[in-house]
Length: 233
Image (cartoon, rainbow, N blue to C red; front, side, top):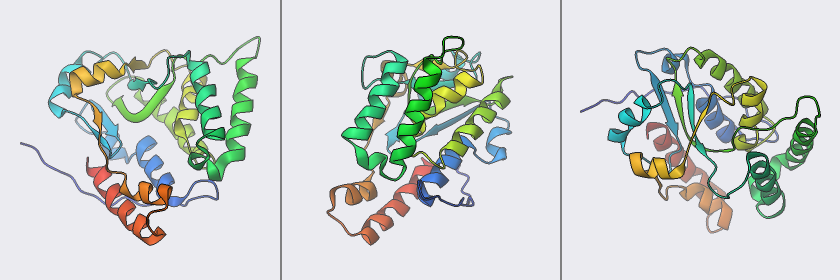
């Protein structure tokens, strides 16, 4: 029992560092249309097209966190302190997975160096509360601080014009807005247990481009289908 709302959303201009398709997805992720934030519902749940969750488990889990404006998935790829997680992920992409930051490589280096300066500031050091996997987000749009979250997210989107990886950006903007301690960091085990969270293989277009097994036109066609269904999911 349910219904779908299907709507076409305007694209935003890509940049030399971040192409249109990726930036359009970031726009929907961080600055969705106002009707999504101002409806009769309390929560907006956003997740990537390759993620599957049990919708029946959403309400009881969210009811546990009505006092929080934002729920995010805690970084689970390594057991590390938040700042160390950021540095390790930057280093990994700058050295071993360059294809993920190929068009914004120099900007990522500059951002890492800038945050290191903030981190080492003796008066007001940047120490993120957590580091996050941003494939799924739960926004409490009925919370009194939802507008502050929206403002921080707009800053993230603006920076996404020059840096490809949003997980490098969000912890700083939450901290800079004094919101980092307001966010609930959910463990992967909690999402497994309550939502049957899992990742499914739908990234056909990106796989074609990554491994060189398909032409660019084939990959772009697959990506168009994938992204269309990603919005619905």
